[in-house]
Every structure is written in structure tokens, then in C-alpha cells.
Amino acid sequence: MKGELLIKNVRLLDSRGEHGKADVLIGEGKILSLEGGDAASVLDAGGLMLTPGLCDPHAHLREPGQEVKEELATGLLAALRGGYTDVVCMPNTTPPVDTPEAVMALIEKARGLGYARLYPSAALTQGQEGKLLTEARLLKEAGAIMLTDDGRTNEDAGVLALGLAYAASWGLVVSVHAEDAGLRRGGVMNEGPLSYRLGLPGNPAAAEAARIARDLEIVRYVMPGAKAQKPSILLHVQHLSTRRGLELIRQARAEGLPVGAEVTPHHLTLTDEALESLDPIYKVAPPLRTQADIEALIAGLLEGSIDCIGTDHAPHTQAEKEQDLLRAPFGIANIEVAWPLLYTELVLKRGFPLPTLLERFTDGARRVLGLPLIRLETGAEASLMLFDPASERAVNPAEFASKARFSPWAGWKLQGWPVMTLVEGRVAWTHERLGVGA
Ligand code: DOR
Image (cartoon, rainbow, N blue to C red; front, side):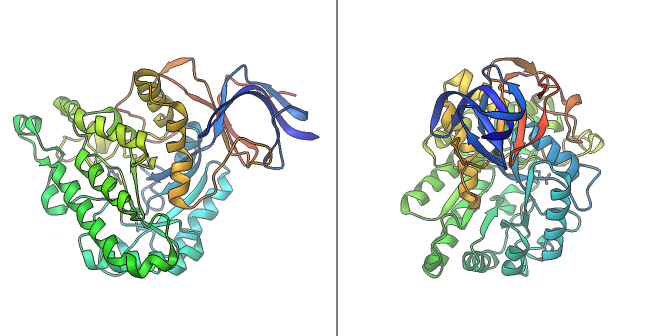
């Protein structure tokens, strides 16, 4: 059997575990064999690890209208460099993505780039204003994978209830930025002893918990009608940041509600103590919380109450982020470091099981989105990440493909860096140190 690329000497890893060494033959967009064969190009991977490509259910790529912060070309290349083959972009753009035409334009543009595959989400309400619903069916037909007003909160419970009912009819997931606007007020960091001492407006954990509790009650309310559609996930809670929010989700899932949740790399690795520096690089919504919240979120990720890692990659310009803490925008750009960061901080330092972490970066996200799962076996789609589990490299934002060249993890020494990303059998990105030769 003749393939296009033979990657020799890889360690196979998917969410089921490690499957030993293999010589992976790739062609026609698929894995043709795990036992070698003839190929036009051959790469000796020297024991690097091959996995399914990562999937991000939550990234801000800023097109249309905010290309000064990021654009598809930079964001989707950054995604590839982070090991991602699949990315969902958020619709809080200028204008918000709330029409089928806008969804189709994004899909077409991303396809032309040939980087990571793009799955646009569309606004739940027109202009993300929280008042009038968008056209769920037409948006789905245009290719929208999810409806969300992320970047804003859904203040009108009745609008969200109706939106969930329509989304269920058309097989769409609704994802929510769960923060109660009244409780959050003008908070720029977690409310707690540090915010009191610094005299900064705090955003309490209760803002998240209260909103999640309300949204879960809305799911209970619409479920009798939505049941016929059998949604696996109807409501997806974005960027979970608190222990209390997790408890509510855990309870809802035990009841059998079709509710999903994600956690970000920053809410798993940074606490509100970072704000002692007053550096807006740490300003994010929801805010960085406490070590106790991190411990709870890691436990939730391990047990599966949290389905997946969502980056909430949120690029802004340097000038915007260099304003003072009260004025700077919320957001941390992280899509290029998410995998090595959590591989290092969770797997290597805390003994978190590697296959489980990979599951949360791949299958977990794909299940929420209704995308097919990728297994490392003959016949599988060859959308893959090759990563180096051993070499250590410090985070250097100057090297980012993202336009946001600053990072709260700058200088952190990480292992697990991706070195090659394949999309449907094509080498879409490769680190310069890897030569692919005949
Ligand atoms: O920190 C955040 N930044 N949280 C959000 O919900 C929005 C995002 C953005 O768009 O910058």
C-alpha cells in the first residue's frame, strides 16, 4: 500500500490510553496502516507521541471587524501550533456573527487558509443584544455549530428559555457565559481578601454560581418539550471558574440534564494572587479564583463533570492590555500554550492521567459539539497532533503566531510542545526542527 507520508517510530496515544510504538502510514486523509508501508515522504519521529488533533470549543478569533487583535489567518495558525485541528470561534465580533451569510463567509475564508478547521458559533440573539433570537435553523444550515452570546451574559431568562427550545429543535448547543451581571457589577478581579486590600472592585464566586443555578433551572423547564430531540448536550457552560459552579453542574448531570461544561487553562493554573501585581495581563472574565477553586476544577476535570478544556483564547492589542487594570479589556490569549501548559502542570507535576487530559482536549470537546471522535486506528481520519513529551522550552510570546504576543505564562518552562499538526492527512504545520523528507 503506497501512502503520502510515513511517520516512523511514534508512540500512539488516544483517549483510551497508550498503544505502544508504530509506523503510521497516512494517505487519502486517513491512517492507512499502523505497521508502515511505502510513502512519498518519510519522517522518523524518534519516539514522539502521536494523538488525535485537539479540539477547542471556545476561541475568539476576532473576525470580522477586530482584525487589529487577531484574524483567522493568525488565530488558526496559532491553533495549529498549539496542536489544534478544530476550533470553534466566538461571535462577539464587529458586527456580531448573527446571520447565515456571516457564518458562511467565515467558513469559506478559513477553508481557503488551510490551517485548523473552523466551526463558527453564531449569536443566540440578534446583535448579541439579548432581546430577539437569531434564526437557529438558518444558522445551523449555514454551518454554525453552536449558539452563544459569549462576551455578554444572557440577562433575560425568558429569551434564553426560548433560545434553548429552538436550539433543541435544530440540534444546536447553546453555550453560556454564566455570570450574573448584577452580582458581577464592575468587578475586575475575584472578590475576596485581596480585592478588599487592593481596593479593587470584586466579582464574587456567587455571580457565577447564581447564574449557573438559574440556567440549569431553565434547562429543567424546557426539557419536557426538548426531550423528543434527545440532545446529548443542550446547554454548555463556558469557562467554569468556581467550586460552587462545579457542584451545581455535577448535581445537574447526576439528574440526567443535558448539560456540558468546560474549563480554561488559566482557571486551572493561575489564582487571583497574580493580581497583586496589578498587571492587566491577568484580567479575565470570569476572573482568576482561588487555589481551592483550582483543586475543585481539577477534580471535576478528572471525574468528567467537566467535559473539556476550552481555551477562551481572547487576544487583545498590547496597547489595550497595557492600560490600567480598571480600563484594560478582559482576556488571555493561550491557544499556543494550552496543551504543553496542562501537560506540564497537571500530568507531569500532579500525576493527572495523560489519557484523561487528552480526552478532555479531544473527545470531550467533540462530544459537546457533536463532532465525530478520532481514534488512532486504521481507517481513522488523519487529523493529528505530534508532540514532544520530553524536551523543555520556556514560553516565549515573541514567537507566537497570534497577534497577542504576551502571556501570563511567559518564561514558564514547559514540556509537551506540539511539533507537527496534520489536518485530514495533510501536514498543516510543522516545527522547523522537524524535516519531512523522502
Ligand atoms: O476574558 C474574556 N474575554 N472573557 C470573555 O467572556 C470575553 C473575552 C473577550 O472577548 O475578550
